[in-house]
Amino acid sequence: MRLREAILQRGFRTPRPSPLHCMVEMDHAFVVDWDGRLYKCPAFIGRPRFAVGDLKTGPAPSDAYRPGRWQTDECLACPYLPQCFGGCRHLSYVAHGGLGRIDCARSWFDAVLPEMVRQDVGYGKR
Image 1 (cartoon, rainbow, N blue to C red):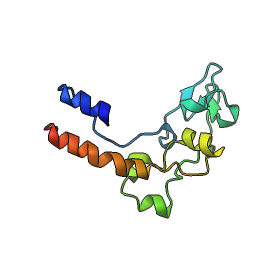
Image 2: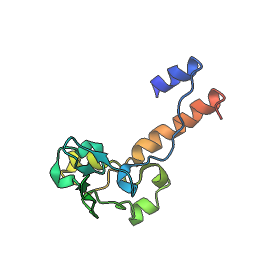
Image 3: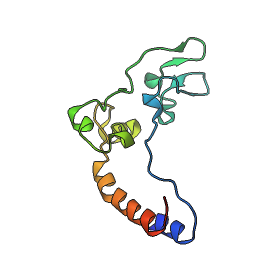
């Protein structure tokens, strides 16, 4: 937040918070590794168990990344759902060893969004 404040103080623009468009949740978004394997997230390149196909055969249906995992009562009740969609799959994998758990960032949003709004109002950003 201090860096954002310094940027605004100097008259530069900063991006507004907006929904994160994770490739996992997009039907036609893939990343390709050196061997032609398709992945739904660049952080998982090189981990063949997360490949969802290849350039020769195309993508195959897979729940390896747990798409739609945000469709829980907790996430659906969260005011930040359009921002995070259950959080980052890679961060969940690093923290918990798998993709089954939500990487909830609600405490971060609670702490940061009010300050961002204050900054935007203070610097006349619309």
